[in-house]
Length: 262
Image (cartoon, rainbow, N blue to C red):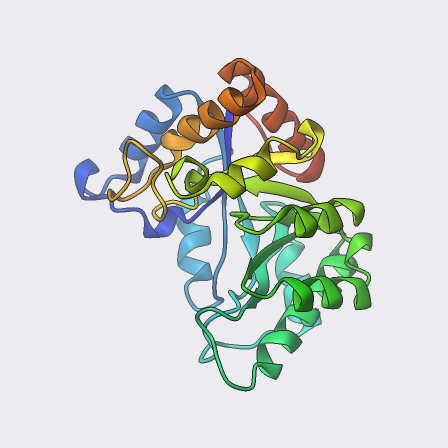
C-alpha cells in the first residue's frame, strides 16, 4: 500500500489525460496508490483545489499559506480553524520558514508560521512544515509556540541529522521526497537511514522534484514508489515493507484521512 503524503494535484499537468482528472485518478490507483494528501499553498486557489478533489474519498487536503509568497491573503487563527473544520481537511499547512527564496526582513514569514502553529493546536490537526535554510529559527519558533502539542511532519526533508533529531524529539515525523534519489543527496540518504521507521513518511511533492529515473519530468504521485525503493535499499528492506510502514505512519498522523484498503 503506497501513500503519497504530500502533493499538489491542482498543479499536475492534466494534458496527458485530456484534462480529465478522473482518468488521472484511474491511472494513479492502478499504480497502487491508495491515498494522496493534496496540500494547500494559498487561500486564493484553495477553493478550486478543494472542488477538484471533492469527489474522491482517497484524497485528503490541508489548508494553509506557503511561507514564500508575501503577496497572499494572510489568514488569522480563527479563519484557519474554521476552514479546518471541513472533514476532508486533515492538516494545517504547508507552513514554515524559507530563507532561501525570501530575503530581507522576514518578520511577516515568522508571524505567518506562528499563526499556523496556533491554528494547528486549536484545530487539533497536525502541521505540515516547509523549512529551507532556516534550521535554527524553525526549531526556535516550533519550541516557542509549543508545536509539539500539535505534532506534524517536516515535509520534503533536506536538512541534517541534528535537525531531524530535534524534530523527532518534539514528536514530529520526517518525510522524504524524490530528492533522496538524487546523486548529490548522500547526506540526506544518511539521515533517512537513521530516522526511526515508525516516524517516517514518503511523498512526491508533485508536480515538483521527480525522482530518478524520472528526474527533469513533471512529477506524479505514482512515482512515490521510487522514494520507497530508495529507502528500502538504504535499510536493507523490501519495498513493500517500506510502503506498508509509511502508510501506517500516515494513518497514525493524519487520522481523518480515508485510506482505501489494498
